Structure formats: C-alpha cells, structure tokens
Image (cartoon, one colour):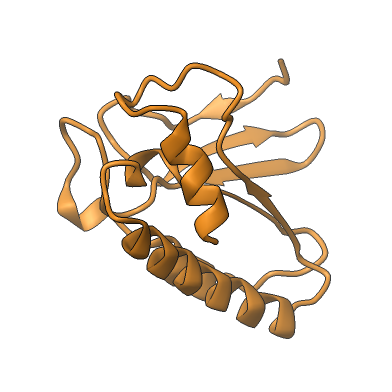
Length: 130
C-alpha cells in the first residue's frame, strides 16, 4: 500500500481524492452518473463520465481509468452501447486536445462470479455490444 491521505466518506459517490506525497501522485475519483446502485447519493454528485472527460485538460501527467459495465447489466444493450458511444466521443476529443494523455479502459471480469444478480453471459454480451 502506498502512503496516502484520503478525503473519503463512504456514503458519498465523489469526488474523492487520495494523495501520495512521496511519489507526487494525486488520485481523483468520482463515481459515474445513473444508473447507480447506491443507497444514498446526492443527485448533485452524479456526473456522467463523458461530461467529466470533456472537462479534463489532459496531458502527459494525466491518466484516465474507465470501468463501466456492472450497473448496466439490468438495462438493454442499446442503452449501454449509447453510453459507451458518449464516453468514446469524449475520449477521442480528449486525445485530440492532449494526445499524450493515457486512457485505460477496464472491462468486465467475466471469469469470476458476478455479484450483481446477473449471469456471466450478460457482462460478456455487454462487451460484444461495443
């Protein structure tokens, strides 16, 4: 574990920040907008990933990590594909204005038991849809 300071409250969806002073790393986290499986989340705190990406300056010291699939397993594939298309458009625009930005996209772990109440076939279908 790296030594960090966190400004985290378990009932907030973000933004959260962790700081590793020794390695000069600032980690900023924000949960995505709807759909969200959270019992308590202020609506004002819910931001869509594409809008957040549009607000980034980017650059050689910026790494964007995206992971979206689990909360979409109860929705039609077309909705998931639409949201992914918005994120893709935002990532393309980010890379045009700051091509040295690193973007990492994590997909579903289809080899493990999914705790979302859905079968393993649905995450795989989401991956194939995009």
